[in-house]
Length: 93
Ligand SMILES: [Zn+2]
Image 1 (cartoon, rainbow, N blue to C red):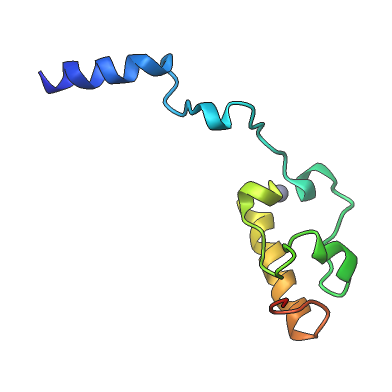
Image 2: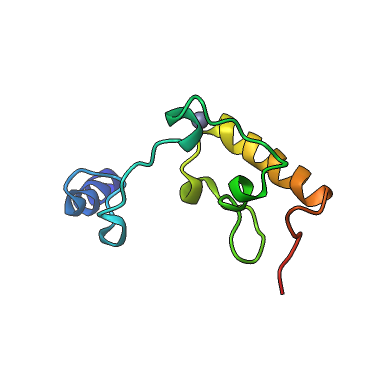
């Protein structure tokens, strides 16, 4: 009985469990650090690290950077080091 109800509800989304019309066009991003093997993250390189923080100075989430788990950890570490040596702000405004 309960299963029947559940199936009826699920049948509405074309069998795709992740279906959400708001995110229909969202493409799977490829990790920028995996894509380019020559790209090495350097915490002293402000220009490079700045791409991984928003205008408030917060570290962007994986869904925004597109980085894999391994490289997101590297990015986080690099941003935190850059903040420590005053290359990046801890906070803006
Ligand atoms: Zn990666």
